[in-house]
Length: 173
Image 1 (tube, rainbow, N blue to C red):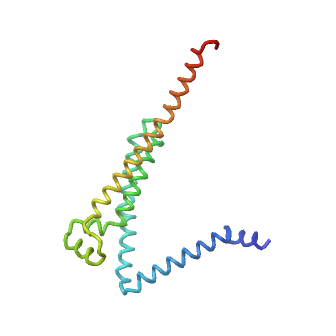
Image 2: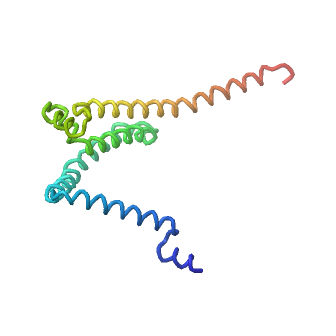
Image 3: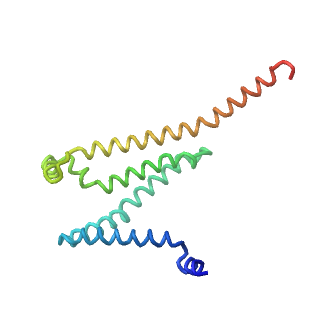
C-alpha cells in the first residue's frame, strides 16, 4: 500500500526518482564547477544569447526550411514517410554545429587553434572538417536507411510474385 501511495503521489517508481535525483545532483555539481571560476557573467550572457539566437533566428529558419521541404514534397503521396530521413540528420547536424560552433569557427583562425592545442594538447584546427564528415556520414546513413526501407517492400513483392509463378507452373498443380 505504501508503494502504491508513493507512486500515486510521485507518478513513477522509486528507481525513476533515484535516477532523477542523481541527474539533478550531477547537473548541480557541473553548474557549481562552471560558475566557480568567477566567470558567471560570461556564462549568463552565453546562455541568454544562445536562447535568444535559437528562439529569434534559428527556430524560424529551420521551421521555414521544414515547411518548404513539406510543401515541395506534398504532391507525392509518401512525402511524410521520407521527410524524417531528411529532418533527423539535419537536426542532429544543426545541434552539433550549435554545440561546437566556437571550436568550428576557430578552425579558420590559426592563432585560436594554437591556443586550443597549447591548452589541451589536442589538435585545434580539425573541428570544421570533422563536423562536415559527421554531417556527411549522418546524411549517407539516412539515405542508405531510406533506400533499404524503400526497396524492402519491392523485394518482398518480387519474391512473392516468383513464388506464385513457380507454384502455377509446377506440374501437378
